[in-house]
Length: 506
Ligand SMILES: [Zn+2]
Image 1 (cartoon, helix red, strand yellow):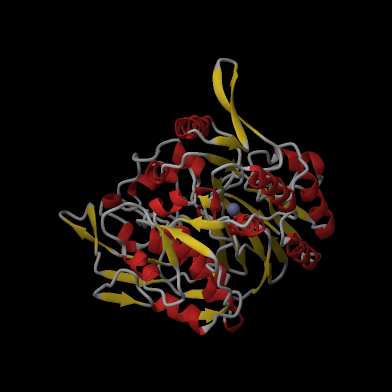
Image 2: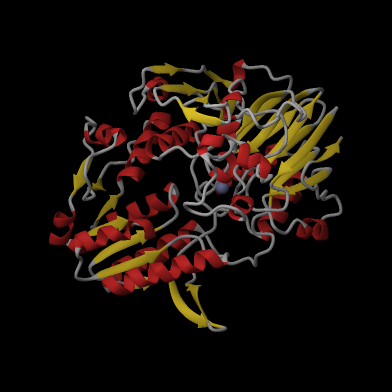
């Protein structure tokens, strides 16, 4: 018997936590952080208390009330044993965006995680370069100890535990070595196993297919036992690897159930593609004066490759932040491609370096850094990949002329409108010409207005959603990752809209 239970992500964009059970054996399809639900209580520096483990998250209903969490995250005054348990065999990750995997770090260590090698590399590189947030430490974490009366949890910083990793594609020796490498030397490092999915038995067959999304390594899954269930994760058809997504859907023709993302079910279709973005940004770069700053979503490496191509065609050099460089360099451990060739790394004015930065500096494959003063000398020769949070560095570069290209997602929330005002203030202060968006006054409020062609979404349009559903032709469609599930029931007779914690049985 097959059952599907959606714990979260059925009527919000992100936070997917889908539990699939076949004959008593279960797997989670993603276990992401629900930014919308978190945002109702937390913001920037107002965050869940580390010292209370999952206490705040449980009490604010930000994670499901089931007994599946790491023991060391449960303070004495939290009763988790009264919650129902599940027979979890593994956690499948569709891709490395935190709204899909940002709560996996909370789960019991005994659950192995399944993902593409690229996704694993990105997750480790993200952990290496950022301070751990509760739950987002997906591949490894420092366990906690109960102190005082057991209600306070303290991190054992000298100890690091890596989860068991199951790769959906072949992993190389350098992949293995990368995971052995601890950026922060610890007294104790407990390494989990690394294996290939072909050698594992979960009581169901799991097939994986690369799909196109705004981050590399995105995967769609077909899970079969009595029935075949297809899970799209996030996908699109209009990117460079769009054809790969189509291959997944053609192979999903036998699926009884299609669990599909619907991010754009509430938005109008527009004419877009990564090719259009390339042409538009190239045109802008050719006519640009002074230093060019390109702003696109972090970890959108396809967009980064586009700006690398633009730099080459306009005779300029691309500069990335050290963090981006570390992630780009990590990807080489999956496919052997050197993505740092002809790319420079921005050397920030700051005191001391983190361990991962030393690693980057000591690379023998010749990663080159550039100082702000050197950029100024030939400012019109560079395209630098900065976002709002990096703009303070422009005060050090002191460019006399510049062009800013905004090539990232549009603001849908009121909160991000303030970010755009801030972004505008920075650019206005520094005297940059802006492309990709402008600030307009609408019903007494300042709002960003986006220019066409500078960005293509990471998600499928409505017409593409219809197209792939027609290809798969499933018995049942279950929409997730959408704030408009009703669109699916209007379009299709066989759409099933599940509520939080509701189970569907086949
Ligand atoms: Zn995503």
